[in-house]
Image (cartoon, rainbow, N blue to C red; front, side):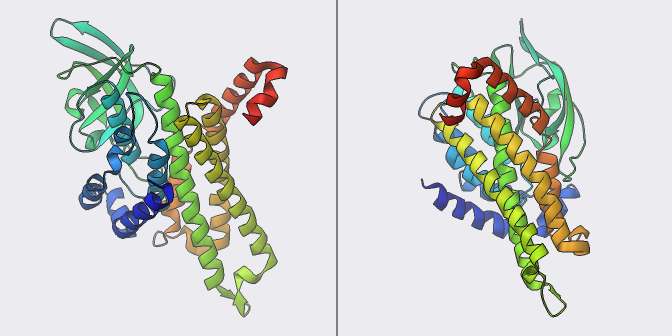
Length: 347
């Protein structure tokens, strides 16, 4: 399916159902049941798994990215990116995916889960902080000791928390014999790949939120009258909007390029490192400028802008901040050496 057609469809769905009232209610702990039901009925949760031509294949990642970009543009408060990745992992391992929203763990490189065989099944042990929507998830999916496993919130100790955007980010600790089976993932799929795909999902979400912030800033600059004319007619505002648009465009290209690299089985490590670094940088710059253009109104709870900028600040911290991915880029460049650097940049 054309990613433009798919993104238009996703934009309509999220535009209709992820209203400011729904987002605000979600931050108060109300699960957006109608929104999630529509997402599942549209097939968005299976966009990555259903398009796989073979276990572990990433053919559907471009379509998945288009959906996530639309989701980010409307600040939709559902664990769609996590569910996409979890269902893709389970399908690749030949495990059934439970109904409802899913999550994945961990969101950092330091947290490690261990899995060992016991007489009664598989014992999973480990802890991770800031897991998205853990308490609302039907199951949380991990890769531990070379196997894909899933556990339910009832099998873990979950301490509720929130991100800066007001979305559930829970601390999870588990040491239990799982009720479900574990299985090896497809060749080439490991915890590091899942981490990179998580970072790429955040790039698409941020790219969408950046689109939304740009649209709001341009609209406000055209509507706000000062000294007898729209503030968008003033050169200083035009310069700010130009920088904002430049960062939005660069972030979109970086995220889309990384998705195409993943679909073609290219150098995903380099592509994701570039994308997460560049999109995270854009997130900080765009949030700053968008609030400057809006002035005081942009900081009020009633305005839509904070739904986007708070998610930008939250998402840029998940699956590695810019400095972490910049270090990764340095390692990759050093490994290639002086003769390999030009090829790394142009391939």
